[in-house]
Image 1 (spheres, rainbow, N blue to C red):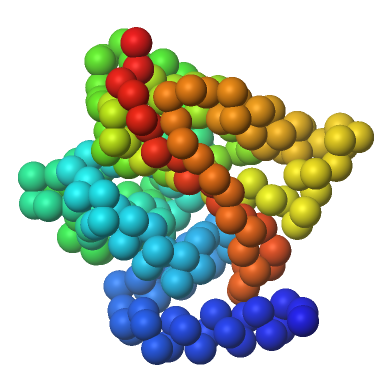
Image 2 (image 1 turned 135 degrees about the horizontal axis):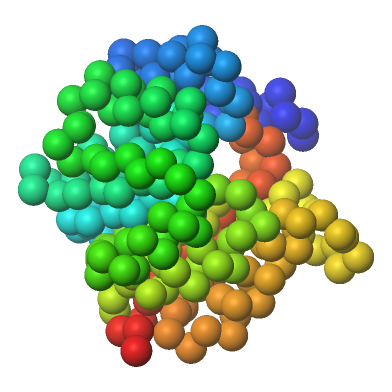
Length: 225
């Protein structure tokens, strides 16, 4: 088993189960042409997020980490016409590209892109009494995952779903001696989730075109105090 095989399997299921989409293809092309790093979720993962949002019946979504808006579009397409999605992006160039992609997808009325450091933006949302959100997707710098989770819980209600991407880190998450800030952030995040009585959670390892990684999913089982 190797990444070539994982990629081939991803392509097989994407071809079978994820409809061809010229808008999403154009998003990835625009991202690449703009020099954004190729770290978007894979198409089958985007469809997975879309289905989770539909299963949840989400009307409001918070996304922490926009990049070029590829996952944003997958999530926003699951919303009803009166739904809303707020996505947070720290890099001005990424936010500019994302806004253009979201406009091309015809989703400007549903999506608000907020530019700035994610923790600052989250503090602003808190001051504005935003939320609760039905679904929260955490996919930004991993060193701050503990704080992102704390805010996600604050912006949740009983029944909200919190999804956190890239928690396996090619297996390095189990390295107790690591000094990598991203590994430390994921491990601290896992400790927080494990100790939090208001959520029921698990984590899943994944392999595919994006390599070896995984995600955590938490169901909020009680309203935050």
